[in-house]
Image (tube, rainbow, N blue to C red; front, side, top):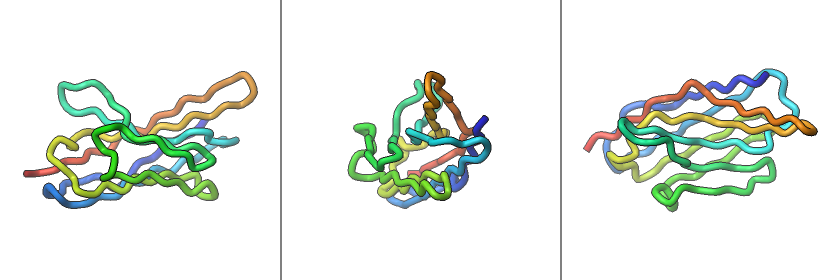
Length: 119
């Protein structure tokens, strides 16, 4: 079992920056994919960004050019640097990790961290 713990959320003014961290612990083999999703009130969960163990990245259209995802494989930690924040970025941000071990797939989620951007 893998546990994900997020940190770094909070309240920031529009145009500001925040950095989220997500540390994985437990029985880790190889976290093939780590990433961030978010859910705003009344909306569906959406992709923010993902990064593979080989550092290939993918971003949701709404955050391209403003957010940067990175990971430290030695620490089993993924980061999300969020710049030029907008009120519409307000949401609960969830860390996600995917691990493939042979024929089994582990799909893990953190508890979420609130990000609030004031106008």
